[in-house]
View: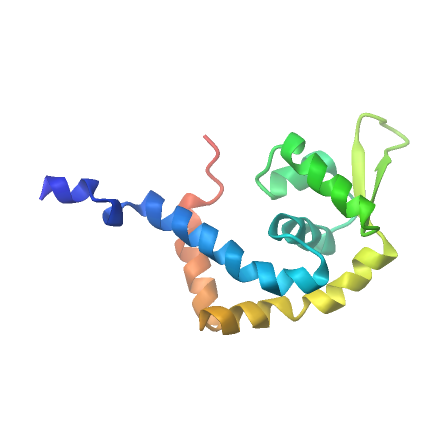
Length: 142
């Protein structure tokens, strides 16, 4: 019985890693027409909720290190979707804001959730229950 605890198929870590990799592969063809990668999509989602915001604030909300986020932000800026500016009152703070093009992209992105639900065969309530079931694992950054 104790040996079963070490079976790969019984590991929650393996199930989560596999699911994460698979969900990103489901998003890839949906996001491709928008010209976004999955990490870039997450950045845009956060900015559609609130813009402008500091790089540090954005990194915190996305559970990413600022150094990891910076290249994503630079690529989105190169695409004309966001702008990076230094705060006038504190030049150490880098603010990230949506451009007109970045705001307009939101209209196209409104189709993404429906496409994902169709691809995985789940409705919004089922996906919300799945997301909520992952709450014990989210937000932990030890």
